[in-house]
Image (cartoon, rainbow, N blue to C red; front, side, top):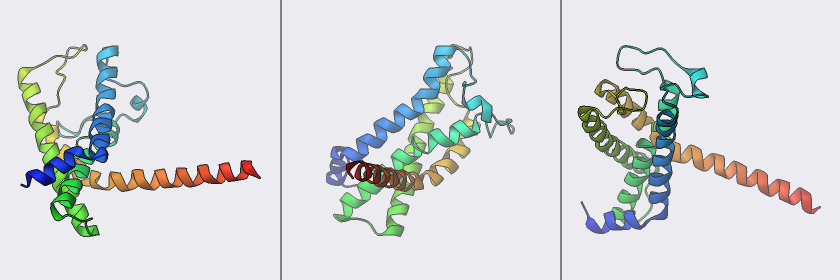
Length: 175
């Protein structure tokens, strides 16, 4: 591990945008649950799925949306930035996605360890259940992390389309 590449990654604005933004997105459902004292979220309850054993939770849609940004998406960006700093140049397409995969899986592993420790401590939420995930859900988290390597590209695509649409609207107003 190169400390210089790691330090450069920590100084990068994109790294902190994804880490902090992703953590906020991850925290929103938890904050709603704590505030309402109910496990079921108001809007996402419309898309509730049945539990499949202890492996696939009933809040699968929420899990997919949230994990796309944190820990998987943010870890993917961290992995890409670290590897790019290590090489000293932008990464080729395949290398970029491989670096994102390593970063997403590493950050998901660290987050899973935090979840495991919280579960062992049995910290209860306002609804009475454990605030942390069951370890049986961790394999799903790693699957979602491996898919979240595409989230930065999807977000960039949407941003570009919205920017182009905004420019067209602005241009029409000036006529």
